[in-house]
Image (tube, rainbow, N blue to C red; front, side, top):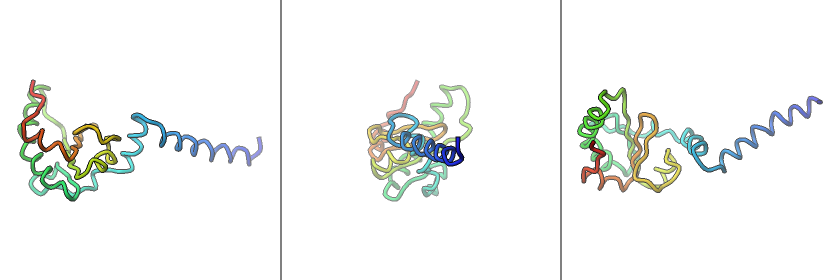
Length: 134
């Protein structure tokens, strides 16, 4: 093989894989997209810095802050151990919710490792106490 051919393959393979990853559906595409849109850049809520929000989602962030102690207690009791860390992210639009990690605008919320991402219409469910109590 010539050096030119090796160079062509070395450049083409990553480009083809990147294009495939961007158009493919499923967890790999969502993972790639979410890694480019880290919600850690969002503003932290002063009352509870574990909660981050984008402009326009301040009310949702406050609702999450009010519900967090009870929800954390319920989950810790069910699991029999405390959380090591937790982060909640509140979004103002379904589009940004999808861009930051859900990959789709369908659900009210999603989780990733120790992060919970809340769609803008999840506020009513949180206020109503729709927790997964055991």
